[in-house]
Image 1 (cartoon, rainbow, N blue to C red):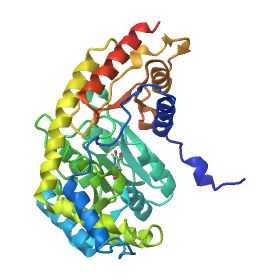
Image 2 (cartoon, rainbow, N blue to C red):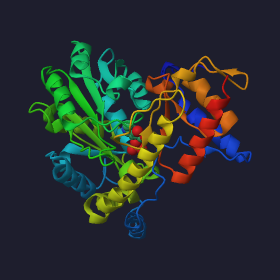
Image 3 (cartoon, rainbow, N blue to C red):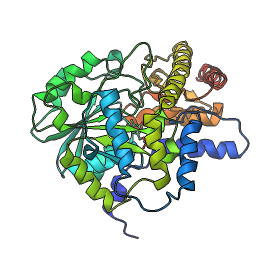
Image 4 (cartoon, helix red, strand yellow):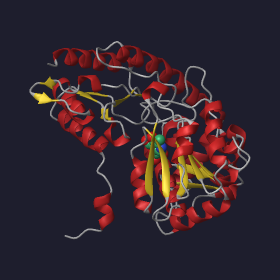
Amino acid sequence: MSLARRVSEVSESITLAVSSKAAALRKAGVDVVGFGAGEPDFDTPEFIKDAAVAALAKGQTKYTPTPCFPELEEAISRKFKRENGLDYSPAQVTTGAGGKFCLYLAFQALVEPGDEVIIPAPYWVSYPEQVKLSGGKSVFVRGEESRGFKITPEQLEAAITPKTKVMLINSPSNPAGHAYAPAELKALAEVVGRHPQVWVFSDEIYEKLVYGGMTSVSFATLHPDLFRRTVTFGCHSKSFAMTGWRVGYAGGPKEVIDAMNKLQGQMTSHITSFAQIPAAVALDDARGGESIEGMRKEFEKRGVHMWKRLSELPGVTCVKPQGAFYCFPNVGKHFGKSAGGVKLTDAVSFSSALLEQAHVAVVPGNDSGFETHVRLSFATSMEQIDKGIDRVGEWLGRLS
Ligand SMILES: Cc1ncc(COP(=O)(O)O)c(C=O)c1O
């Protein structure tokens, strides 16, 4: 069969491969400790679920306008003003099936074949694939572990060429759990400010999940010229534990938002009808903020605990997480050793042997540009964290 070339150009997700292997082991009755999850282990708050039940009861089961009911656009516009200092009118916001689809639409709306997109590494696995689907070329800028995985203004300046169309920034970050301090982001904004052809995609979906007194700030507020060339992304997935609802949103210049809506009109039309009013309620109702803060506090405790335990493991270094719900330890010192007859050569062989032999699921960093690191999610209980890291420690001790 001759499938379209774009299918072979897009990489299969290693993350999914690991989770399906873990699922197969579980199905076979093995007690697997899973650190792979990219989603809160909390349930969606009741008041949001109640709003969905009410939406169904009201018959909100039909097509809606593209991209959504005006009530949701208005709620997103209010949220951006109130919480981010971003004055996007309702016509300057859009929604999509998760932050993921909003990012996809934005790449499709702005990037032409041959355009360069700057992506700081480590990065979320889908960015380069979405860039490929737009015909663009990813230019990776490495955030070194010694600098907490953050890129410097000098590195950014050096990466910008006349072909640069977009600079992507994701803070707090998946997979490394790092977050840029406002002054660090401002220094990057100053660089982009000097290059009028460069757009910014600011993926702020983990904005609420910051630790150790860190504060989140929206990139578009950091330079007078950037509001009109930044698209800001958010979603309900992580903040309101709504990953399965597929609600994401973006704010930006009207021309870009109109383009994204035009594309969406021929693709999915809109997000699920009965998720729309609940999504607006989640943003407007004070209980939304309270539930996020409850999750944030719990994640902070778990993150600090996981980081301490990982840092105590032999041959492992780990940067303290400042945001999201991930630790991203460096396990490269163990490469070259053997585990039960299997040679460990990179994060994939490490993760695969760890899963098979110690029954702990982690995500290899290869797809995020770091072959020496693995991602562990702390969106799981303290008991699971201790149990899993005990197993990792015991397994590392057996390597030869
Ligand atoms: C950095 C980042 N951006 C965007 C997304 C997309 O989130 P969703 O499509 O679930 O809203 C994710 C999901 O894991 C992510 O980690």
